[in-house]
Image (cartoon, rainbow, N blue to C red; front, side, top):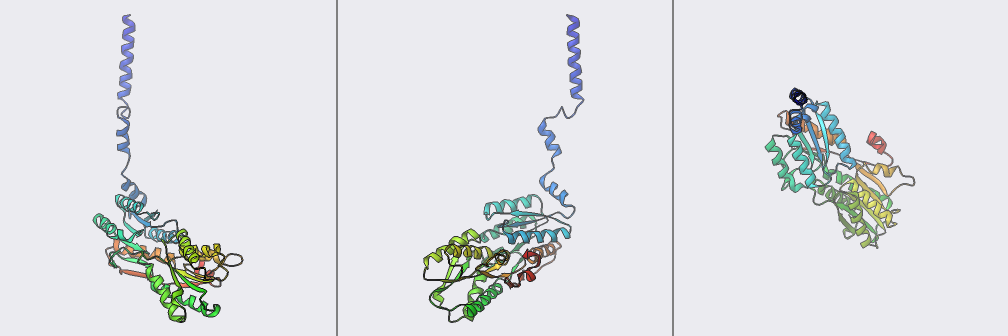
Length: 348
């Protein structure tokens, strides 16, 4: 019995010695994770290299315009020695602020952004200023009472609107007999400061060049920038005015104009209609359709110019320089006849 007890005691002591010789076994699992896991910011910085990460946070990152703009921004950032993180805010203020906070937590080298709601401008600017992170607004300005708070890169909105208005006016002169059954529909986005001048330019130039057009036959459909909302808002106006048999349409962005085109098709009014988009990135697909489309033209401006331009301005801020407060890109109206030549790879 004594021999058995001695053997058990010896085995117990041996197991204890083995356990104590393994430092990992002597520590709780949570303690091991704390010592091996690096903070998120350090992980991002290490992945980015010495210069760090630039964030591109866009209000509607699933739209073609922002995808193309983000690709151009990414290429420009990487060419300058930074990595680039693309974020889709999904038109959600909550998602957008989470993305801003995440970029700050990860010690971003800089941020280029298009905000989903311009009333958030001061909050976003204050957050980045407190964190010491340079900030550039792309497409939609970060502003209060019309005053830009940070440098902005986007399109020359009023002149682009004028280009659309002029093209549409010339189309009317050549193809349309004016009367009480001809209406002009402006797709507007009145809550977005960069979009308001587009519709103003379209209206001003069209009425200047076609002064005989009855302004009582000019209608507006305000939407949120999406194709779906553009479709429903345009459909409501079309349904409310059955006396209009020939619709002329232009607007604040490509999605709204394409939505209006779909509404005209549903109403059986597309054959005599003329839709002029703004962006070209969806109109190009309309130009390729067998049998044609009621989308006859679009003011094309380069997402690549805006994306690369926003990074160029951001790099100036990072280097301590003072870039211009506004950098604007002009447009060229494209049609089925010239879009391939003008748009290049973006026509594919």
